[in-house]
Amino acid sequence: MTAGHVRSSAVDIARELAPSLADRAAEHDRDSSFPHENFDKLVSSGYTALTVPKEHGGGGITLEELCRAQEILAGACSSTAFAVNMHIHGLAMIAAMDQEDRHAWAYRAVVQDGAVIAGGFSEPGIGGNWWHPTTAATPVDGGYLLNGRKGFFTGFPAATLLFVSAADKDDRGRPKPLGFLLPRPEKGVEVIAEWDAAGMRATGSHALELKDLYADSRYLIGDAGQLPLMFMRGVHWAWCSFASVFLGTAQAALDYVAAAQRERRLAVLDRTIAHLPGVQFRVADMATKLAAARAHLYAAVRADHSVDVDPLGHYIEMSVMKNAVCKLAHEVVTLALQVQGGSALSSRNPLQRMYRDVVAGLLVPPNSDLTAEWSGKQSLGVPVLDEPRWGG
Ligand SMILES: Cc1cc2nc3c(=O)[nH]c(=O)nc-3n(C[C@H](O)[C@H](O)[C@H](O)COP(=O)(O)OP(=O)(O)OC[C@H]3O[C@@H](n4cnc5c(N)ncnc54)[C@H](O)[C@@H]3O)c2cc1C
Image 1 (spheres, helix red, strand yellow):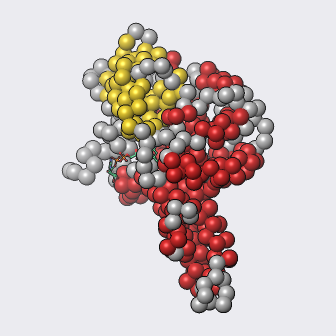
Image 2 (spheres, helix red, strand yellow):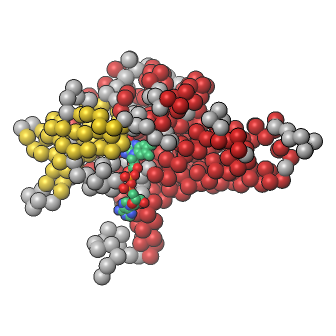
Image 3 (cartoon, protein in one colour):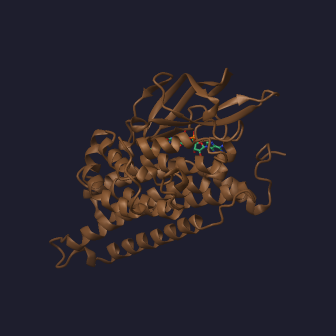
């Protein structure tokens, strides 16, 4: 698939694609099938090239443009928005580390050939503690052999490039965490469990095994050992775009439920359900929570991202925001179900899908307990990364 020329704004493309994504969302959710047609459109419209730097022929869009567009896509199909998010924010994170245009080949592949990135950092042995991969990177001539398991690899069915973590050892035997972006190989990667889950069913978030996967050194992101730096330097791209997906899902739940109550009548009422105080209060509560979530997200989007001053503080600020927005988004969709009543759980009703999808916002990184710990320690003047964490 050839990528389309980046023409209109991210929001315009998202608006154009949203109706067809929405039409197919229920079917892909029911079948747990990967939305390849949606990805074809995301590629041919130029959407997947939007975060490629301008000097490499991409859209070079701002974080705000990305989040606004992702909200729209998520309102139509959360799974598609979440899956393409791995590609689109991943590119921006890689570019933020790419001082020497080392990944120009990848930008070219995205812009000219429609390449798509999927990323795997979670592992059975570390969960979401992404800074500490246990996938082994064994140095060999010209690169590394990677061996390990990745628990979730969203977007894998469409991926032509893999964004993965692993760890080598330094001279003293301590782990040296590495990030790679490499072409999806013919061998060395095996799907060990297909994604069949309660929510985000159309994301193809398969579990993979890396078996002697050869990664040339030129595919390293930054220098060896700089994986945590990559997460800190690009964290605003990651957590803001994650939050925008769940915010978009919650907004769609409010829009749906408000429209439905304007039409629905019960025999015991001589008016629509919209006239019931309980319905009005819940809808008002949803709108208030959404406004708070949106304000928090876009304050984070517009924050100072020159992280070299205080990378850890920046990481914490973005993490707190992502978790707060996702919690509110979950509350909004839960309220939507209550407003709608029992029919919300019918498989024909989109609210049940939104509910199952929005739960994922509470589960994906950053870890909420660790975020609370770091944020609390920072506020209290307790050194954030000191070990032992609570002892002494
Ligand atoms: C729909 C979906 C798609 C996903 N796609 C991807 C993907 O594309 N790539 C990818 O890499 N991952 C992906 N993930 C995985 C996601 O990133 C993980 O859910 C996340 O990393 C957390 O890991 P875990 O679920 O194994 O939980 P764990 O990290 O094992 O956490 C389990 C519990 O332990 C607590 N805990 C864990 N570590 C700590 C700690 N250090 N301090 C305090 N408490 C802790 C947690 O708070 C939680 O309560 C996806 C997940 C979902 C749901």
